[in-house]
Length: 411
Image (cartoon, rainbow, N blue to C red; front, side):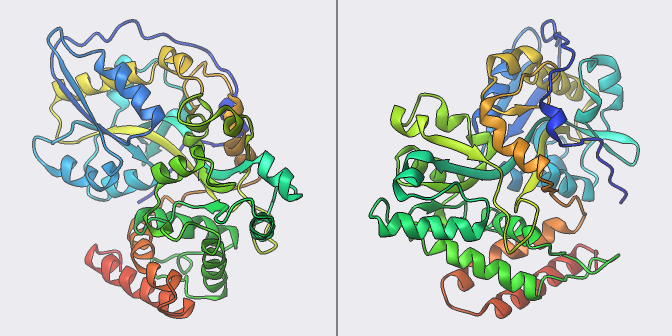
């Protein structure tokens, strides 16, 4: 599959562009059943999209943090359980592998005049998704805690460990680091970030054969394990929601959290003024002498189910267009790094922009990357708990991946 994204994630995406207003929803019929992740930006989009409900059309939104596990099954049904879904670099590949999304070129020509070229995710010459925001995991840090410990803002993971050691020695925090290490997709993503920071390759050149059982893979696992020594012992249950809660409670001094959470931890709700005023953002750290931030660049967008009827597809497109309108972005400027025309840069977007400028890698859009990601997320817990060696964990990952990739026809 020749996948070419027109999305160029760089500092340019936060620059102001031309503004095009969507004047009302204009939906006279059809049913839009939307599935999306559950975080502040998607909540804002959902609120704007559901404003289109009524007047002959039905618009509903299911916000679900496990949405990525539901998309393929929902789009496979005929008629589909959801007519449109939130997708990303990773989940669109899974949808495309099974041919479950429909091209959006016709709907864009009819109703999408305000969509910028960089929002059009183009695969084999057809627009298969429309992106609305850029995202990346990057460093969140507490300035007051680092100052009290007498350490500078760490630019490397080795520096993060040194700062954490100092914070603990000073008695400031017992567990100063948090990570989205929940077993499964989240843990897999942490490995992907760290492994790319080490300069690793997931596959042998020109093939789907795995290639992670190597020195860089071992170094990646050893760094992840070293970080967990400064995390809450329940780290294998911590996803983004849990880490955000720990941050807002003042229990953490450093974390590599999604940029989409930056606005949420500085919005005047859920924490104290002291914590919020000392919450700062920076690029994801580098690691092991590498020069690029150990993170991956993502876009978030939406796709429409191939099995949706023409009327439902049009209703879904119009509802989503209202959801990602310039007016919505202006009203929720701190919720995301919007790619929407006219959106202004936001202070909380600094970490994503700095990571992009630092040369962070886009998440790999390969048909078999999902199988690799799933194998990583499922096989790392035993190593982190000290039940097996790094080499054995990497061998287990490759074996699990080969089984999954063979079943899917990639090997």
